[in-house]
Image 1: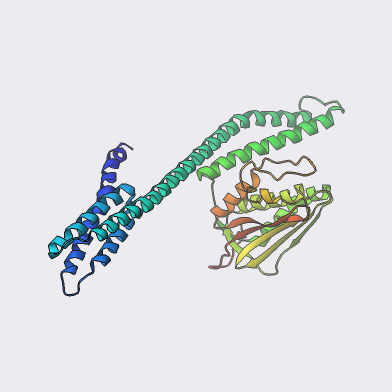
Image 2: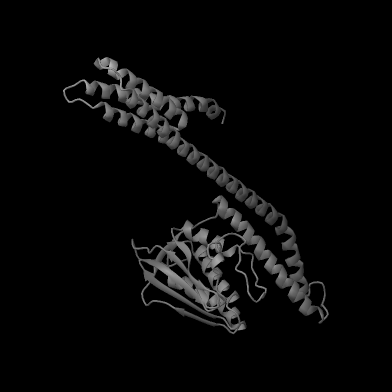
Length: 367
């Protein structure tokens, strides 16, 4: 940082004198051409000088342009004496006026552009700093919560198993409720830790070749018990041919689980969910539901951390708002993508998860 600070004034000086030096070189060459049989009219040279001033203003700013305009006017005023003629006062005045206007207008626009660029870069840096601070806080909070949550879930499990003696029957429902909430809290802690690792780029990834159809079928089987409890219509459509991909099976499973769970969460009463795997250049999985849908103002933010679609019925929906953000990062980390294809309030949503098809060799068995 100190080296850059020492170098900055020199860079600024170079920027200021660069355009005037180029202006001197260009004008000298033009004046030499004017004395050849080809000749260059005085008016054409004046227009060229104004153009050079505008270029200097656009590239190096107002100060460089004003210095360049002084050189241009000086050469234009001196050139007639070299040719043995009297200078044209009106032409010289017009040149001065045009050069100064070009320097002021273009230079002011350039300076305004640079201020906007600098302000935008400062805002981006502030956003990056805020994101880092949030990520650090999430990691610290998750690590602090992990141990007590583990202790709580451990003792709850022992209570339910009767390790401290048989619990009264009236405790059964209470223990089940507490255990369920503790499990949700444990899942939130794990998601926060995973989100921090994703941001830091430290998530372990083990890419292997496998058939995406198998991953989809396994995800549906994991969701079947919950779908049955919700009386959901959960269907899957798989192609007859293989969908060979090379990715981390655990990451793919997490992405599919997130999409299916969200479809069930926001599917309303008796959710309808359809999972379709296809080969459209890439291997892709579409998860469609006929649930509540996502409002238009939320579509651009649905993949942001801690952002959740609002429920018009105010029905509580479990979750942290991290699932889609983590899933998209995991998908992109494997050369794939996760996107919202379409959504309409009251009509449902369609998400698509894509992975590049593996074409180099047949898919081997997955361990």
